Image 1 (cartoon, rainbow, N blue to C red):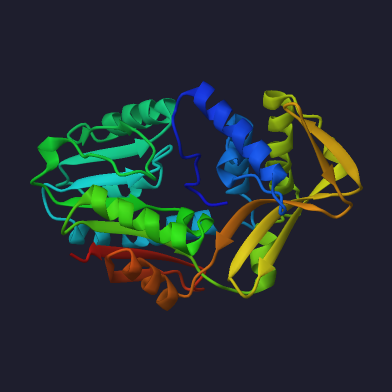
Image 2 (image 1 turned 90 degrees about the vertical axis):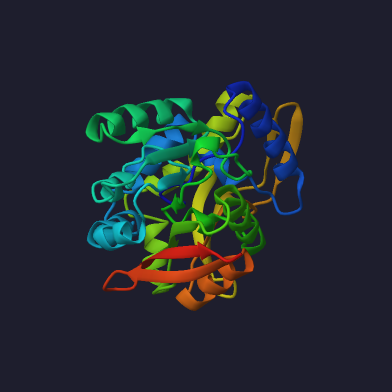
Length: 323
């Protein structure tokens, strides 16, 4: 659960619905039941996540925003005149504006997202605020290699991937995504990326299981979505949200836990749940800075600069493509 976490895949709603059906059946049929975290973000889930980012327990959004605000001038100094800023999974592009305010010699901004509505709204807002800046949205799955517009082939490209969305991926998948981004941006490119840091376990757990129950509602909304879109008959009062910390792997795991033995019907399939049986819904890996540098090096990136907040809760890195 990170600020830029958005569903990857095709933007066609019918295709996304089909993907959800296939993921539900496959995930609930597995020995360890699971539903991929990208399906948390339907309209209701996205609204709940926006509410989560304002909660006192949820530090990542405000902490990263503060780092970007305080370091925007230094970041801008790294970006040469005439460069192109490419944001992966741009969403509303709100954090990007902190950088654009200081990047007055930037040639273009390229937001990449699967949501045409998000791209349209972001382009309109940024074009109005920065009228001299060329804004060229790309509607695509940023997890796949993307061909940049040919007119940018001779320009320096700077990727932007805030929110520690990288933490939602297993290390092997994180390396694959970072390598894909390197191929998209090309040789000599840079990447500005956020990564959440390891910290006191109680603070971590509070961020993923808030006192107001907003994160619980966010997680349980997966079952609401399955009932609405796939004709399932999950009873919400027979499942609960759970967040645990896996010390060995350095990650938060979110689950939906069955409160009793029961059967659930989903799209013509019937699934048995034991009391206490879990549906895994999300990983959120936390890093030591050195460990994160090792991860990005495996994907062909070389660390250049890292900034953290005073409490060392969160980190923002500048990486260089290591050709």
